[in-house]
Image 1: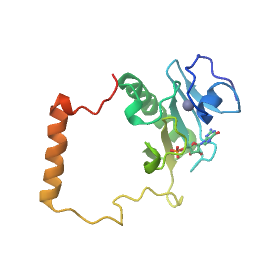
Image 2: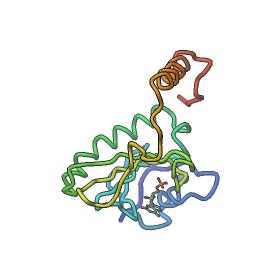
Image 3: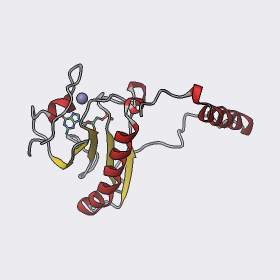
Length: 161
Ligand code: 5GP
Ligand code: ZN
Protein backbone atom coordinates (compact mmCIF):
# COMPACT_ATOMS: atom_id res chain seq x y z
CA UNK A 1 0.00 0.00 0.00
CA UNK A 2 1.26 3.48 -0.82
CA UNK A 3 -0.22 6.94 -1.06
CA UNK A 4 -0.64 8.54 -4.51
CA UNK A 5 1.77 11.32 -5.37
CA UNK A 6 0.05 13.77 -7.75
CA UNK A 7 -2.49 16.36 -6.55
CA UNK A 8 -6.16 16.05 -7.47
CA UNK A 9 -9.22 18.23 -7.77
CA UNK A 10 -11.70 17.86 -4.89
CA UNK A 11 -15.10 16.35 -5.68
CA UNK A 12 -18.35 18.06 -4.78
CA UNK A 13 -19.81 15.25 -2.63
CA UNK A 14 -18.50 12.26 -0.76
CA UNK A 15 -16.68 9.87 -3.04
CA UNK A 16 -14.85 6.74 -1.91
CA UNK A 17 -12.40 6.90 -4.84
CA UNK A 18 -11.55 10.55 -4.16
CA UNK A 19 -11.07 9.54 -0.51
CA UNK A 20 -8.70 6.76 -1.56
CA UNK A 21 -6.68 9.17 -3.69
CA UNK A 22 -6.43 11.55 -0.74
CA UNK A 23 -4.92 8.71 1.27
CA UNK A 24 -7.96 8.30 3.56
CA UNK A 25 -7.87 4.50 3.40
CA UNK A 26 -5.67 1.68 2.20
CA UNK A 27 -5.46 1.11 -1.52
CA UNK A 28 -3.26 -1.19 -3.58
CA UNK A 29 -1.99 0.84 -6.52
CA UNK A 30 -0.54 -0.82 -9.60
CA UNK A 31 -0.13 2.29 -11.77
CA UNK A 32 -0.30 6.04 -11.31
CA UNK A 33 0.50 9.11 -13.37
CA UNK A 34 -0.65 12.73 -13.47
CA UNK A 35 -4.05 11.88 -14.97
CA UNK A 36 -4.87 8.34 -13.95
CA UNK A 37 -4.55 5.84 -11.18
CA UNK A 38 -5.12 2.09 -11.32
CA UNK A 39 -5.70 0.00 -8.22
CA UNK A 40 -6.94 -3.41 -7.17
CA UNK A 41 -10.70 -3.77 -6.76
CA UNK A 42 -11.49 -4.43 -3.09
CA UNK A 43 -13.98 -7.17 -4.05
CA UNK A 44 -12.43 -8.70 -7.16
CA UNK A 45 -14.30 -10.99 -9.53
CA UNK A 46 -10.98 -12.82 -9.85
CA UNK A 47 -7.45 -12.05 -8.60
CA UNK A 48 -6.04 -9.21 -10.72
CA UNK A 49 -9.31 -7.26 -11.05
CA UNK A 50 -8.10 -3.68 -11.56
CA UNK A 51 -9.94 -0.35 -11.70
CA UNK A 52 -8.53 2.39 -13.96
CA UNK A 53 -9.66 5.73 -12.57
CA UNK A 54 -9.16 9.40 -13.49
CA UNK A 55 -7.59 11.45 -10.72
CA UNK A 56 -10.20 14.14 -11.17
CA UNK A 57 -13.75 13.40 -10.16
CA UNK A 58 -15.94 12.77 -13.22
CA UNK A 59 -19.10 10.77 -12.73
CA UNK A 60 -19.98 9.11 -16.03
CA UNK A 61 -18.65 8.56 -19.52
CA UNK A 62 -20.22 11.73 -20.90
CA UNK A 63 -18.50 13.83 -18.22
CA UNK A 64 -15.02 12.65 -19.23
CA UNK A 65 -13.01 15.05 -21.44
CA UNK A 66 -11.80 13.28 -24.60
CA UNK A 67 -8.12 13.54 -23.70
CA UNK A 68 -8.70 12.02 -20.26
CA UNK A 69 -10.85 9.25 -21.75
CA UNK A 70 -8.17 8.47 -24.34
CA UNK A 71 -5.51 8.38 -21.64
CA UNK A 72 -7.53 6.01 -19.44
CA UNK A 73 -7.99 3.73 -22.43
CA UNK A 74 -4.25 3.78 -23.14
CA UNK A 75 -3.52 2.89 -19.52
CA UNK A 76 -6.03 0.05 -19.72
CA UNK A 77 -4.49 -1.28 -22.94
CA UNK A 78 -1.02 -1.23 -21.35
CA UNK A 79 -2.22 -2.98 -18.23
CA UNK A 80 -4.28 -5.74 -19.85
CA UNK A 81 -1.44 -8.03 -21.04
CA UNK A 82 0.45 -7.46 -17.80
CA UNK A 83 -2.60 -8.35 -15.68
CA UNK A 84 -3.11 -11.45 -17.80
CA UNK A 85 0.47 -12.49 -17.18
CA UNK A 86 0.38 -11.65 -13.47
CA UNK A 87 -2.96 -13.35 -12.82
CA UNK A 88 -2.51 -16.28 -15.17
CA UNK A 89 -5.90 -15.56 -16.75
CA UNK A 90 -5.81 -15.32 -20.54
CA UNK A 91 -9.26 -13.78 -21.03
CA UNK A 92 -10.55 -10.44 -19.88
CA UNK A 93 -13.73 -8.39 -19.59
CA UNK A 94 -13.31 -4.63 -19.94
CA UNK A 95 -16.39 -3.16 -18.31
CA UNK A 96 -17.67 0.38 -17.80
CA UNK A 97 -20.89 0.82 -15.87
CA UNK A 98 -21.77 4.39 -16.82
CA UNK A 99 -24.69 5.75 -14.77
CA UNK A 100 -26.86 4.25 -12.06
CA UNK A 101 -29.26 2.53 -14.48
CA UNK A 102 -26.22 0.80 -15.98
CA UNK A 103 -25.21 -0.56 -12.58
CA UNK A 104 -22.62 2.05 -11.55
CA UNK A 105 -22.29 1.99 -7.79
CA UNK A 106 -19.29 4.27 -7.27
CA UNK A 107 -20.09 7.52 -9.06
CA UNK A 108 -16.50 8.27 -9.98
CA UNK A 109 -15.86 7.05 -13.52
CA UNK A 110 -13.75 3.90 -13.76
CA UNK A 111 -12.88 1.09 -16.15
CA UNK A 112 -12.97 -2.45 -14.79
CA UNK A 113 -10.27 -4.80 -16.07
CA UNK A 114 -11.54 -8.24 -15.07
CA UNK A 115 -9.40 -11.31 -15.68
CA UNK A 116 -11.61 -14.27 -16.60
CA UNK A 117 -11.27 -17.98 -16.10
CA UNK A 118 -13.44 -20.80 -17.41
CA UNK A 119 -16.18 -21.60 -14.91
CA UNK A 120 -15.51 -18.61 -12.65
CA UNK A 121 -19.27 -17.96 -12.40
CA UNK A 122 -19.12 -14.34 -13.55
CA UNK A 123 -21.10 -13.35 -16.63
CA UNK A 124 -21.93 -10.36 -18.78
CA UNK A 125 -24.98 -11.95 -20.39
CA UNK A 126 -24.83 -10.85 -24.04
CA UNK A 127 -26.84 -11.43 -26.10
CA UNK A 128 -29.37 -10.58 -23.39
CA UNK A 129 -31.76 -13.53 -23.00
CA UNK A 130 -34.62 -11.15 -22.06
CA UNK A 131 -34.56 -9.18 -25.32
CA UNK A 132 -36.46 -9.81 -28.53
CA UNK A 133 -34.76 -9.56 -31.94
CA UNK A 134 -35.70 -6.36 -33.83
CA UNK A 135 -36.34 -6.70 -37.57
CA UNK A 136 -33.88 -5.31 -40.16
CA UNK A 137 -36.04 -2.22 -40.73
CA UNK A 138 -35.83 -1.32 -37.04
CA UNK A 139 -32.07 -1.92 -36.97
CA UNK A 140 -31.58 0.16 -40.15
CA UNK A 141 -33.74 2.98 -38.74
CA UNK A 142 -31.72 3.17 -35.54
CA UNK A 143 -28.41 2.98 -37.44
CA UNK A 144 -29.54 5.81 -39.74
CA UNK A 145 -30.68 7.91 -36.78
CA UNK A 146 -27.36 7.49 -34.97
CA UNK A 147 -25.39 8.10 -38.19
CA UNK A 148 -27.23 11.34 -38.98
CA UNK A 149 -26.84 12.61 -35.39
CA UNK A 150 -23.12 11.81 -35.65
CA UNK A 151 -22.81 13.91 -38.81
CA UNK A 152 -24.89 16.82 -37.50
CA UNK A 153 -22.83 19.00 -35.15
CA UNK A 154 -26.05 20.53 -33.77
CA UNK A 155 -27.03 17.11 -32.51
CA UNK A 156 -23.79 16.86 -30.54
CA UNK A 157 -23.93 14.84 -27.30
CA UNK A 158 -22.36 17.66 -25.33
CA UNK A 159 -19.08 15.80 -24.80
CA UNK A 160 -16.38 18.01 -23.34
CA UNK A 161 -13.16 18.28 -25.33
P1 5GP B 1 -19.25 -0.09 -10.18
O1 5GP B 1 -20.43 -0.92 -9.73
O2 5GP B 1 -19.40 1.35 -9.75
O3 5GP B 1 -18.97 -0.24 -11.65
O4 5GP B 1 -17.98 -0.71 -9.48
C1 5GP B 1 -17.46 -0.23 -8.28
C2 5GP B 1 -16.32 -1.14 -7.89
O5 5GP B 1 -15.58 -0.49 -6.90
C3 5GP B 1 -16.78 -2.50 -7.33
O6 5GP B 1 -16.21 -3.57 -8.09
C4 5GP B 1 -16.25 -2.48 -5.90
O7 5GP B 1 -15.78 -3.73 -5.45
C5 5GP B 1 -15.15 -1.44 -5.96
N1 5GP B 1 -14.95 -0.73 -4.70
C6 5GP B 1 -15.90 -0.18 -3.92
N2 5GP B 1 -15.35 0.41 -2.84
C7 5GP B 1 -14.02 0.22 -2.95
C8 5GP B 1 -12.92 0.59 -2.12
O8 5GP B 1 -13.06 1.20 -1.06
N3 5GP B 1 -11.68 0.25 -2.55
C9 5GP B 1 -11.49 -0.44 -3.71
N4 5GP B 1 -10.23 -0.74 -4.04
N5 5GP B 1 -12.50 -0.81 -4.52
C10 5GP B 1 -13.75 -0.49 -4.13
ZN1 ZN C 1 -14.48 10.95 -6.82
